[in-house]
Length: 120
Image (cartoon, rainbow, N blue to C red; front, side, top):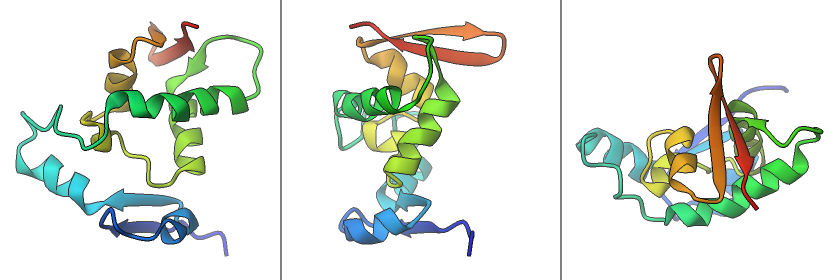
């Protein structure tokens, strides 16, 4: 019916449930975020490098001629393909922080927008 569906659950939630949602948020990320925001970075359960395939896939699927991608567009595509994607799972509050940590990507600011490109 064109409704936006947001699911909230534990990591043990079935993948089939996660995939039928437009966005799925893990309770563990909410608890980590609320517990202590000053030290939550670095406490993610997944390594930052584990996000590289998701970012590269988004870059491959987004149809454009330029090597620079809008960070917002990358984030939207990643969540559309993987509704459970959350930067807090990787110990970062924002996608820009996650990408800046990864050495496979370069970022630059153009006006108010952050642009990202791969370095390989």
